Image (cartoon, rainbow, N blue to C red; front, side, top):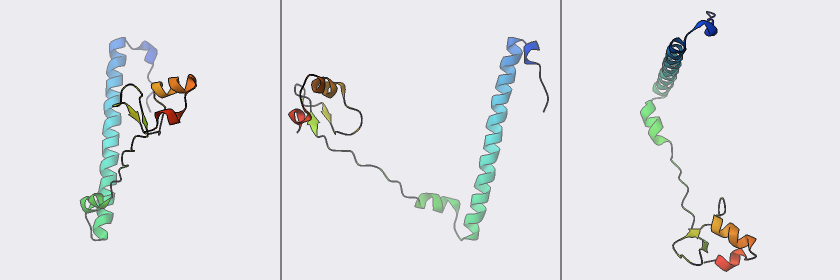
Length: 105
């Protein structure tokens, strides 16, 4: 690897070097992906499939949306499922002494 005295370069030269390095990294990653794809294609063909067939066969699992369990007391359109981070209106109500049951649907 070539040693470069970065302190001797101007700002324009440093920025050009940065662009060149970013391009080189992107090119390297693209080549590695192409190599990996070729290996996977070859293995799939040996087993009697194409990569596209195998990629389609992978199940896509989505998590169903949770049903709301709690409703805002003043605006019924604002709800919370009870999962994840507590909304501010729930946190404020709990801090003021109310319980989650007060907001249950």
